[in-house]
Image (cartoon, rainbow, N blue to C red):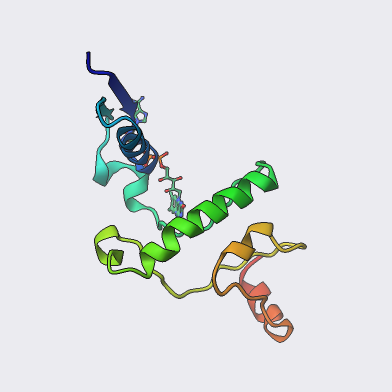
Length: 127
Ligand SMILES: Cc1cc2nc3c(=O)[nH]c(=O)nc-3n(C[C@H](O)[C@H](O)[C@H](O)COP(=O)(O)OP(=O)(O)OC[C@H]3O[C@@H](n4cnc5c(N)ncnc54)[C@H](O)[C@@H]3O)c2cc1C
């Protein structure tokens, strides 16, 4: 008898869950059920920047997500699979106005403090 599994949702969470389940259970029949498909999901239009952060979750879990994500995404972005996977490095600034450094930045690449002389400039625009 074939094990039948349904995943509800065709955004990034539903699709990656479906792939993970299918990889784990190759014999199973996995269906994705959703009322909106690719173009009309939140996942399709959003930025897709990798920066693991969620309010109210334990620091240890946030660190694990950061480490697992970095170990998965960074080699992919640096590989010949980059274009096909849609995972690539981009340049830019993401500013955090926090008192203490967030713990997971140690797993990121090229995270820097804003130099003190530039802080007034940034704080003028970002609160
Ligand atoms: C402007 C913007 C920028 C963002 N930038 C980033 C970023 O840079 N990095 C980042 O990590 N995150 C970013 N996010 C957040 C990220 O996009 C979302 O957390 C993520 O896309 C959510 O994925 P999801 O699969 O949970 O939901 P969705 O992509 O919304 O998919 C939900 C799916 O469930 C289906 N569904 C829901 N309810 C039902 C139902 N009752 N019956 C049937 N189907 C149902 C929908 O049809 C859809 O297929 C951003 C979000 C926005 C809005």
